Length: 69
Image (tube, rainbow, N blue to C red):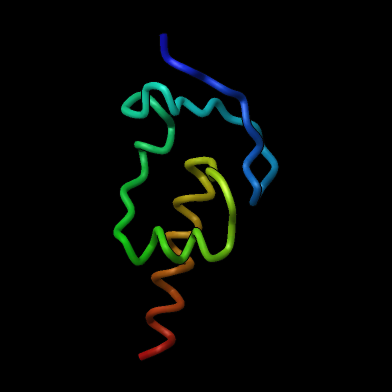
C-alpha cells in the first residue's frame, strides 16, 4: 500500500499530498530539476516543496546564474 501524506510547503505554506510511497504519481514529478537546481533548493528549504514553488525556485536559480555572468 502506498503511503500518502498531506504536508505543507515550507516556502508558501500551501498543503499538498506527498506520495513518497508512489513517487511516480507525486506532484513533484511534474517538475524536472537538474542536480544544481536540486542543490540550490536544498540550500534554501528542508523537505518537499509544492510543484509551483519548485518551478519558481528553478526560475530563481536560472536568473541568479544569469546575473553571475
